[in-house]
Image (tube, rainbow, N blue to C red; front, side, top):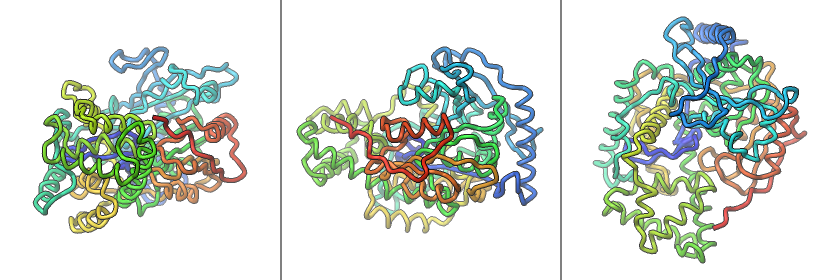
Length: 535
């Protein structure tokens, strides 16, 4: 559910999925075959993939990138430029089938002498597009102004995403149709229906995108990242990853430790092999409940504005009442519990959603149902947006399912989610159905990479809020322990997913200093929280 990524997704299964950082663990996230870095690879398969990556990177370095004005329908403002990097589908066969990865860039805003190379970004998912990253410069985002003076900002669509050989599992218009089934089952019959939907979704992925599925792993995306680095003419990688992008960074740093120059990872997926991805999604369910309660406390504190109750219990009662109403008769004929969850889960994800979600909720309770329908119902006329949602969900599923072995026994899923739902009901069953296609995934599932420090890995900067729902705090601690010399910045008493983009000088100044000078604090740092949203 990793949702990882930062975006809400409505699962095709009748449940709304979160993206974890994965996530969605996002709802979640991903990975493949290798368990040793190319420098020390044991294992024939790993050596072949390491060699294949070196061949593809050398080819890309010679070819470079033919930068052009971006296609108009990519909706990227000038002077952002776009191009392509060719990579093998299977790195064990570097001369076999190739795909093109879409990339874009904007040059550094400072002088030639100030330039330190390219900064490559991944926003998470799996399934998120990074192509909007250079627009932080055209939009004059003040948080990134200093870094933009030194770096070209480079975005890309990972393999399978958007413009980069996109995959699909179901017709996009079918995918967004509403209302879907209530993710919380009332009976064994409900569970059987959801299991059937999950199995059909997995089959649809194979029918529509079968040739790509075995290669939709986090390690392969990390190899693509190294080929992009080479195509840019960069000896070493400067990287910013958020949510699932932190796991991509962790895998890259393990496979290519000597190729890293600077790396910032923000809102960290737990890289432990025991967590990727089944357990990570269960952990997410617990963390989402905590952050949902934080939001309800804030709504109660602002009862003078929202009139939803002046205690958390009263706000929760309003939520349960809304949910029950939507279950009995979907609001506007289209917004049922699954659609409600898809909309409301953005509040525990991001502080920026606190006011908008509370405002829509408040209007509904005051008698304005249209605001809720407008916010939570799919827009069937937005075919491009619906295709992007379906594609994002397909990639999320494909990566998380291929990265690791998932339980194939329904009893395991039923036991774990029934138990969790008792105390953490907000997201548990929704997340379960979103990930259940992995239990019947039609291609081989890999063993996750053992994330660890390799020769040449520089200090990595880790940034994490203490109460993050999508990527719980323990993930940052785990990566910190695995990457020797890394530094952890903790935003105390905060829980927004994606910290580096928020205004918090304690965090922003350290990120700037690290990217501009390579320096980290002598010890880990705890920052006060960024400003709480004001209604």
